[in-house]
Image 1: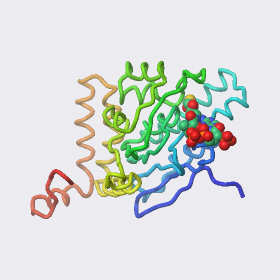
Image 2 (image 1 turned 90 degrees about the vertical axis):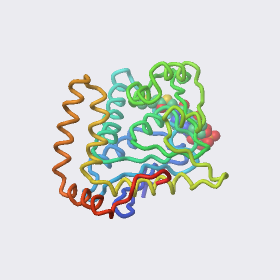
Image 3 (image 1 turned 90 degrees about the horizontal axis):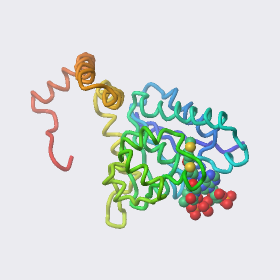
Image 4 (image 1 turned 135 degrees about the vertical axis):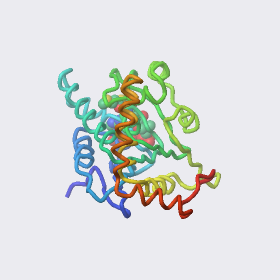
Length: 264
Ligand code: 1HE
């Protein structure tokens, strides 16, 4: 039996998807992209948050350069491959379910494109980010010009790609590529544990609020201010219909809800 490219499991209502191609640093070939697409196309209905992880020392080395080399794809063939990446990663970003990514080692090229589609990124302190496409004679094709450029800004992405600069975890956090950096040598909770606990915490939010947060904010950012404000009002009106809104508000009114405090 062949080894699965993705491992899937569950902890309560958190779905865990693990890239399982450690031998090639989780580089993504066409089959792996299809497997990611398939998972995010059919997330079981009881799953409220997905945790995206990777086996081994590296999160993802990007495009499978060996497959790309061996297939000698034409421009049109490669464009179709890129469209497959776009479809799969769009399901991660816009599938309506929060996705937490746990990063370690190389998060490069298409690996950074994959991470950029997640909503929360937790990085081990040994994580590094790069876009080495220029040195490989190609370009980004998994959404970096849209997602990564929005995170770090287009001019910074241009510089990163031209120079091939490798960004460490701390600088990555300053740029927004990681939201949390865990240094277990300094006694921090390991990245995988923090990522899982954040995923569980997010799963405790109202499901409709989570849906709105991951579905509306990035789309509203594409709109004019007038359209964005109108859409925000519509989304709020829709979310307000959630079955547990009154219960959650009542818990606060009756002093049974947590308070907003630093450290929580
Ligand atoms: C690979 C790949 C890959 C490793 N495709 N096989 N991405 C890159 O340019 C990154 C290329 N990879 C690296 O720079 C390094 O491999 C790493 C920094 C990620 C890891 O280094 P290391 O020392 O741990 O591993 P290694 O010895 O370099 O690699 C181990 C094996 O993984 C080796 O194969 P082996 O048969 O010799 O054991 C490598 O060939 C294999 N491997 N990375 C295929 N990427 C939609 S467009 C997206 C465009 C891009 O993503 S461009 C960026 C591509």
